Length: 494
Image 1 (tube, rainbow, N blue to C red):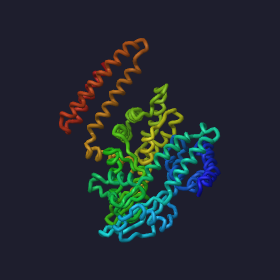
Image 2 (cartoon, helix red, strand yellow):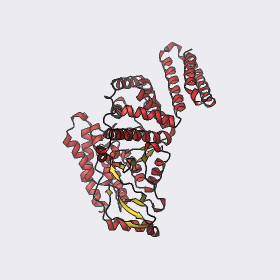
Image 3 (cartoon, one colour):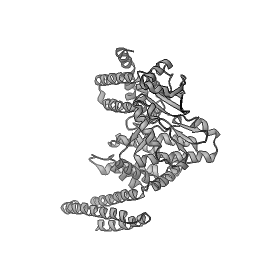
Image 4 (cartoon, rainbow, N blue to C red):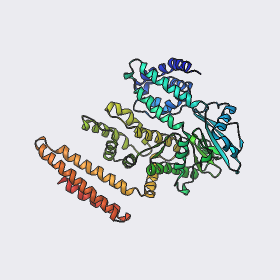
C-alpha cells in the first residue's frame, strides 16, 4: 500500500474517530452507549497495527478519556492473521545468515500472531526446543509511514486545542513507545533482567533468550509448553491457584521495587501454566523502567494505601509531583482528602485500589492537576494485574494479596529502612506544613526566619536518622525510627 493510499485511508477513518472521541469525552462517561464504545474499539482495530498499539497506549490515559472507553481500548484485539510463511522465512534467512544452520526444523505454522510479530516453534540442532518471535515483514516501515501521516493530520485538524488530549504529544508518546516494542534486542534484555533473582519457591519462570539467534527483528527463546492461564484455572486446585496469585503479585512488586521494571501488560494472555503447574511469564515488549526515586515514592504510596493512611497517600502523591504548580494547594488538598475519605474507609472486599487510582486520575482535570506518566503506567499495570489475580483466585481481595506480597518483598529486599526513612521525611514535612498553616500573618517575618532554621534543623535531624540506620543493626531500626520521630516532632513543634 502506497503512503498516498494509506494517507487517504487514515484521513477518511482516523479523523472521524478522533472527532468521535472528542464528542464522547464531553459527556459523563456513564451515559455513553455500549454500541458507541464498541464502535470506537472496532475502528482502532480496523485501522491496523499502528492504531491497535495507539489505542492500547491511550487505554492508560484515564485523565483524558472516559474510563469506559479507556477500559475498552485496553482489550483491543491483538490477534491477527499471520503473515505468509515464505515471506517470514525469507526475513529469517536474511537476518540470521549462516546461523540458520543451528536450526534443524522451523515450523511454518505460527503458534501465535499479534499486530507486530508472530511466534513460530523450532528445533535446534543441540536438542533444545525454541520459540522464535519474528517482527512482521515491513511492519516497521508501515508504522513509520503511519506516524508521518498522523503528524501531518494532527497539524490540520480543526480546533485541535479543544480535543480531550494533546494529539501532538500523544503521537510523540506513541512514536517513542512503539520504537521500543519494535526492537526485539531490547525485549531480550528486558526478559533477561526480569528473570534474574526470582526466588525459586515462587515457581515463576521467564523464558531464556538465545542471544546468538537474536537480532533486532528476531527473538529466539526457550519454548515452554503450557496452557493460557485463564484456560488452565478450571483444572487447578484452590490451594494451587492461591499460591500462583500470591507468587504473581510478589513477582510484580519484586521487580518493580528492586529494579524499577514494570511489565505493563500482565494479563492472562501473556501467562502460561506449564506441565509442572508453574507460571511462565511472556512478552516483555512493553516493559517500562522507572527511576529509584519514583520507586521509593511509589513504595510510600503503596504503604499509605494498604494502611489506609489518607495523610500519607496525599503527601506521597505530592512528592510524586502530582500537586506541583497549584495556586491554591489547600483547596486541592481538601478535594483529594474528600475523595480518599470516600474510598479508603470502605470495608475490605469492597475496595479496588486500581479502580480508586483510575477514578482519581479521571478526576485530575477537574482538580486542575497533572498526573505523571510513570504513575499512569503503574495504574494500568496494577489494573491488569488485579484482573489476572481475580481470574486465579476470585475469593481473595487484591488489597489482601498486595499487602501480604508487599510485606514479604520489602523484607527480602531489605527495604524497610528506606521505607521508614521516606516515612520519616513525610511526617516531618507534614508537621512543618501544619505549623506553617497555624502561623498568623502578623508573624510572617518570624515565620520566615523559623522556616530557614527549620530547614537546617530538618537536614540535621535527617542526617542523624541516616547515621543511626547505618550504625545500628537492622533489628534495632524500628525502635530507632520511633525514638527519632518522637524527638523530631518535639523539636519541630518547639
